[in-house]
Length: 118
Image (tube, rainbow, N blue to C red; front, top):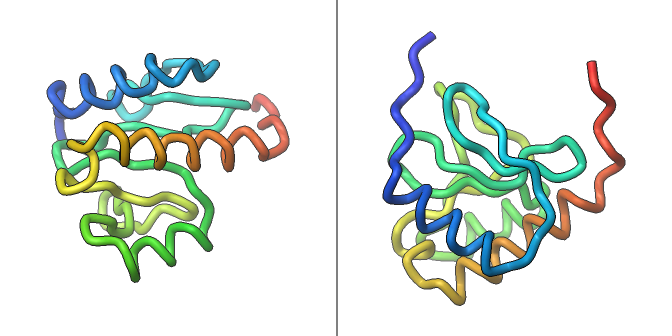
């Protein structure tokens, strides 16, 4: 299976915002893309060049898709990812708004029970 190349420009925006946040995280590769993890779960990343995806939970995700311009369901290879939201350029270029969304993603994902290693 071929995955789209990760946008280094978008990843740099995400990385800078996460560094400023002071979050504790692991940086790993998933499907060839650098991705941020907490408690063993992916909480933020860039898939291809469409935007920044965040794990925020289904309730927040569904509400954002309905109400927030620039928010969409995150799809990877035609599959909508459970709990994940895609932030497009309309959102992620505003550092303050991006920071708020990152806080939501980090809070939600770090509240999950630690993922057991396989």
